[in-house]
Amino acid sequence: MKKVAIIMGSDSDLPIVTPAIKQLKELGIETEVRVMSAHRTSDEANKFSSEAIEKGFGVIIAAAGMAAHLGGVLAASTTLPVIGIPCSAKVLDGMDAMLATVMMPPGIPVATVGVNAAKNAAILAAEIIAVGDDALMAKLQKMRKEMAQQVREKDAALQERLKEI
Image 1 (cartoon, rainbow, N blue to C red):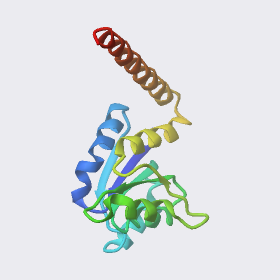
Image 2: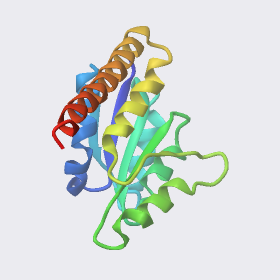
Image 3: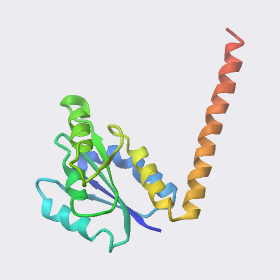
Image 4: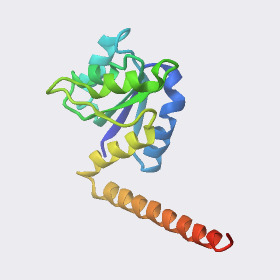
């Protein structure tokens, strides 16, 4: 199975990406988590993404706030799918990161999830990998069925509570 890289622009992004790390572990996907800066260590970021295919990665997740160029820097050096997680900051509540991540030039796409939406980034990464992995696809389908069942159970509980009103 292909691995997933999670690259953070700063170690302060760890609380944001932790749900992605946990979700990927639950699905049995090997994950490598690193800190790289689009601006301060761009050579290392470019090297990592340019070598990612040969190192067995199938997807790269990039978490960054503020200017949030990390996803684009990583995407520029690989043809692997890159998923950006815009991280909220004290200024502009993550909208600056969202726009910087989603507004890529033609030919260098970065798939983008919502601000701080690391779990969705992990699930999207797993879905990409699952295209060529039937066992992983079955896990994802089971997870979806379980989520639907949880909603049905919550609705049934709500209906019971409404009888008392």
